[in-house]
Length: 473
Image (cartoon, rainbow, N blue to C red; front, side, top):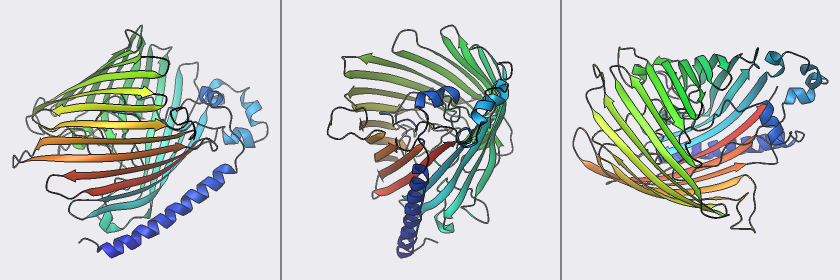
């Protein structure tokens, strides 16, 4: 039963009051800390393994990266700890412990006049050892998401765990638990629960808890070639507290299959990036994905970025999901001048909708609400972004850490496999990110989208997100 609009508005106001209290409380607590180490010092001792570098290309225009990491609090507050730890073996000396706090308010109105709404609080605690004999390390991360405002008739937000008793229940899960072996830059082997970020396999960290995987991966560089190979047996979806096999996560009932990953990448000449990957789930489907990206400096203040992506996806073996074959091609071009960027792109998809159960589609058209990868769908899009920190186009407005992104895409000819009817969709996004430089590790983000499909009214969706990364050790 749909809740009357009046009660929704009342709950909406209550959620905003709670959110405002969180903003005030977080800002006050964070400002009470002493200044952090310079970013380069903190980063050199504590690499950001929880937010790995994107191996896939940015969208039509990229958002600003995550905020910098500050000074480890225990080393600062406990007398003598920093000095004494320098005498310990690297396995203990270089250990880090990090707390990441996240608040997330999600509100989306659907074309059926139903609503998805929740306010959640949580994050994760991560620990990783230093290297033993420069070759062995251990790590783990526990994740949680707790409902602060979560009516049972507004589930479907992805922030919380749906159960038969409660569509918006809490999440508590050991999402990472791994051991690593390495040999210089040639090979890094990671086993058991881990983050993976390779094209169609990625954390999809756009809610409270990211996707993580179980399996074994090995990556490194051999001369000019980068590689990643592995076998992943299971995945934990964003709203779940358990791992399920890769076939089950794709929608197969009663069958168990893993995924075989292979990836090669290179930069043969300055500015040119090449990437090719294959993802095979036996008896389910196989995905081949690749891109070529080129960045060229046109002058001292002008940069041109161009790129093309291709995907081929088809059923294999026993075809547990049915027999299908499809493809997708994305292109884009970006021009960046004095902190201001404008871009445009085009996308086309083959005769079946792309299957993306293991992360966001890595294409240029992965917007807030739509991926524009439905059967027979074509799409075009434009975007503009400005960085108010390094940007010099608006010298009177200088706000370090602040960026603004607006983008619009229109897709048409998406075909329903059952009825054969064709639909169009339009989406406009606003994305504001503020990495608060006065409070290292604090990030505020506001995301707003308006979506209209054929024969339906425009529906809004917005998200307010606070992230605070606190290094403890």
